[in-house]
Length: 89
Image 1 (cartoon, rainbow, N blue to C red):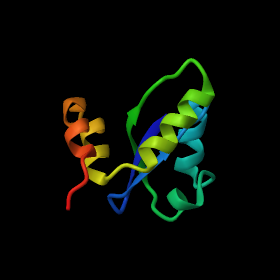
Image 2: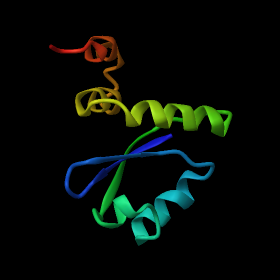
Image 3: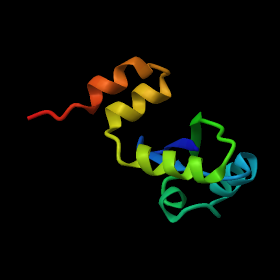
């Protein structure tokens, strides 16, 4: 599972079996349509999983997170994740 920071400051979350190949695809504009319109992109986080389906589950989970929660993960501040998960009213 990986997170890219796009030119406009947004994040793209994906998963792959071959991170180097996938990053090259994104960089060349052959990746996702979302990143193609926001080049260049920069890898800001990656996490290895033994099984691709576990990486996919993590990808879908992180895609649903707020920007603040993604930034905490990227910055390695995982202790903030539970507090950032609480709904604000």
